[in-house]
Length: 113
Length: 116
Figure 1 (spheres, rainbow over the protein chains, first blue to last red):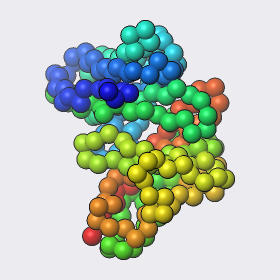
Figure 2: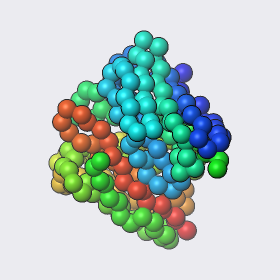
Figure 3: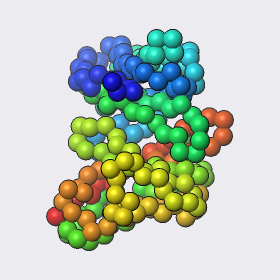
Figure 4: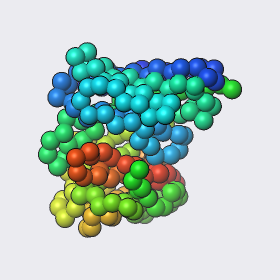
């Protein structure tokens, strides 16, 4: 079993739809949770950062962390064609200089006008 | 957010030559930088973790003599692909980690390497 599971999609939605992206994980030591967006042939861009459990909202994006279920989500409201990209979840336990992010495979999202 | 630059953005080279890729944190100091490799439609694969002033830590299966990493300052890390071969063709991405209470990684735009 992978430490982080993410459905690669592809996910196709009409413009204006609410998008729900999810990751599950197995390591209960994870405390830092991130969502990155990656456009084709570009480096990942940090979208949301959450420490421990709870919700965080930033504009049209909402990140949720449920540590009891080992489940994180990213919601995109009023989706736009410019949101079409691959969304990667990442998480880390946080200890030591060499602590590293564990990545999901990424979910490919297409928002159709 | 913090800005990380990467240079060159793309490079084409002949088999057997060496290629150096630079990664710079432009508006913050990064004690730790990371080098990733990404194949088409696949996730990021961590190659090595680079700490300023010390030797890089390589992931299992990554040849340290082939992928030389130098992190000589708090804002610059370099990856040199030595004696490149066509199978080294890939998308290489660096990231730099901020320090402080809210640590996170910011990524460069990536370097596309094509070895002929």
